[in-house]
Image (cartoon, rainbow over all chains, first blue to last red; front, top):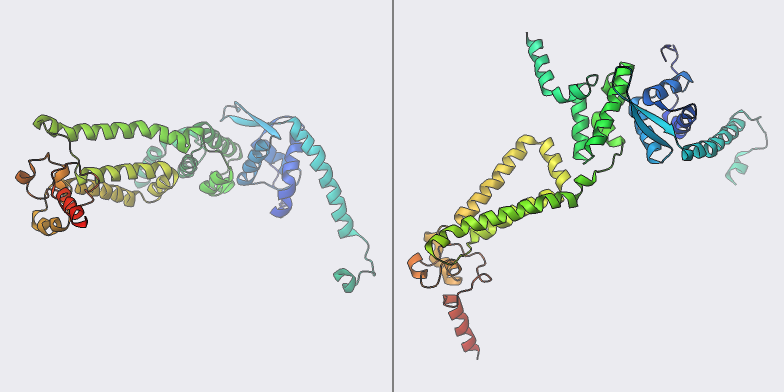
Length: 127
Length: 241
C-alpha cells in the first residue's frame, strides 16, 4: 500500500461494481480484517485504490446481505477498528458467484481475444 | 492573532466532533452527524459510522472529504435503518402525554375565572381556534418530523420567524376571539346569532352586549335555549307549518 505506483491502475467503476464485493469476500477468507486493511489489500492486488466513500457502503451492503458480520476491536493506540468476518453464507456466495464470475471472464476473454472469423457479415448479425 | 481566534472558534464549535473523531474535519463530521440524525438513525449506529471514518482517516492520513466525498452523500449511501425509537409511533407516544397535559393546563386556566365568578365554563371562538392551531402544529410536527427538522436545519432564521409568526397568530386568535369587536358587530349580528350566547350564562347577555365574540360558527356550540337564534328558528318552523 505504501508503494506509489507511477501508473495507478484505475479500472472503470462500472467494471469494479460487479466484482469488488467478491474480491472482498475472497480477502476475508484469509481471516477477519478491518476496512482500511481490506482497501490496502485490494490496492496491493492491483485493483486500484478504492475510495472510502465506495468501500464502506459496499461493506455495509455485504453486512446487510448477511455475507459478513462485524465486531469492534481496539486499534493500535488509535481509534477502534471494525473487523469484518466472513459468514457461512458469504462463503457460499463466494463459491457460487465467484465461480460464475470466473466463467464470465473466460467467456468475455474468448470473445475479445478470439480469432477473427470471416463468416460474420452484417446481415447475419442483424438476423 | 486572527487565525488563532479562528482556530479557537473552530475548536469550540466542533468540540463534540473533534473529541469523537479527531482525525476528521469538524465540519465534515458535523454534516455526517446531522444527516444521520435527521434520518432517525440510532445513536449507536451513528457512532459506529463516524468511528469507522475516523479509523480510516487516522490510518490513511487522508482527509475525510477526499476519501469519503460529500458527508451528506456518504451518510445516505450507507443506507442505515431508522431507529425504532424514532418511528412515527414512538414520536406520537412521546408527544401525546404532552398534548394531554397542555390541553388540561389550558382548560384549567381558562376555567379559573368562571370558577371564581361561580359561572359555567364557556368556550370562546378564540379558545377553540387557538387550540386547533396548537394541535395542528403539533400533529404536523409529529407526522412530518423529518421534513420539519430538515427545514429548520436548512433555514434556521426563516424557521425562527415562522415559529414566531405561528405563536403570534395563536395569541392574536386567542385575544381577538375573546374581546368584543363592537364597531362592526351590529351588522354581523343581524344575520347571525351573538356568540356570547354560548359564552355567557343566560341572563347576562344583555349586560355583555350583543356579541362579545366573533360570529365564527357558534351554531354547533350554542347550548342556551333562550337565545335569539332559537327563537328565530322557532318562528321559522311555525311559519312553515
